[in-house]
Image 1 (spheres, rainbow, N blue to C red):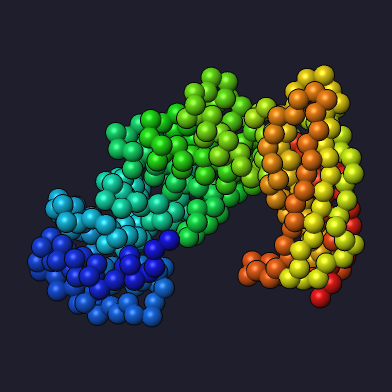
Image 2 (cartoon, rainbow, N blue to C red; image 1 turned 90 degrees about the vertical axis):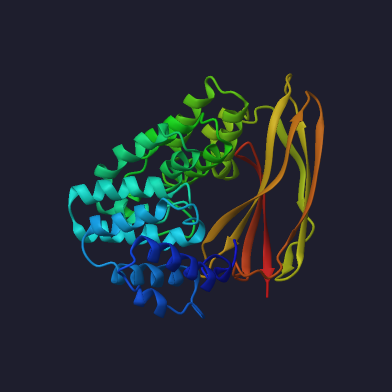
Length: 364
């Protein structure tokens, strides 16, 4: 992701001032001129500019919208400067408190988003009144602009990166599925990727709903839809979810056996490496599509363990064939994981089914 100073910087503020001064020549935009971005993070910059705009444009929602729409008529009113503008529109509509302002703000965000996505600005509106917002958002799925159609999916994602969580969405898993149903065969790859990421978000809370939706979409899937489904199921596949695996053609591994599974050592020090090996055999009479993963069960501070799945290979194994497996796993120090010495385990998993597990000791 670009740095904060590459997105919201003094040049962007100057462009924003120029556009708004032309749209509202009676305003001096004194607060906006006073904003100093140095030392602020990206979110802090957007908030500071939003707050300055709200101070410089007093009155109700309609007064702010009039200025923004006047500025929107100019082609130069585009890019990162739209972010604080969309945030200000959302905040002012909620300050207004009227249903008319709420609806008008959603319409304005849809009109702004081809200039820069309003996926962050829409989320306070979703939190405030999800049931009022969703029908209008669902209507965007038929919008002629791919940017607005994507906003319908991206703005309502349960776990949108860099964005505030919307408790109303998290509390009702699946409430956004009608939006995904409407967009999963969208002609734009930009939109379909958002749908896949949204589906993946939802899989963390309700894998059953995700597998059911993906199954419906796969019933008459073209190549782009099949790719969307695979991307949307990626977390469930990694977790070995049987329904997701079966949907992608990876049935329970009947006839698949594991031989000679062994670790290279009984212990490994933090910072070191541990090898493992084994051989898969297809004892059945038909080819088997296999997703082979290994799972490291890391010891936690309280003595329990938590699993982390790592991809090994995806293969089709012919009847009577064997597949040797060998891998070295690193326990080097990384910022995203804290290692706790003690007993750990390494497990081999095929199509979500454990075929072998061995313990080892992680030492300081």
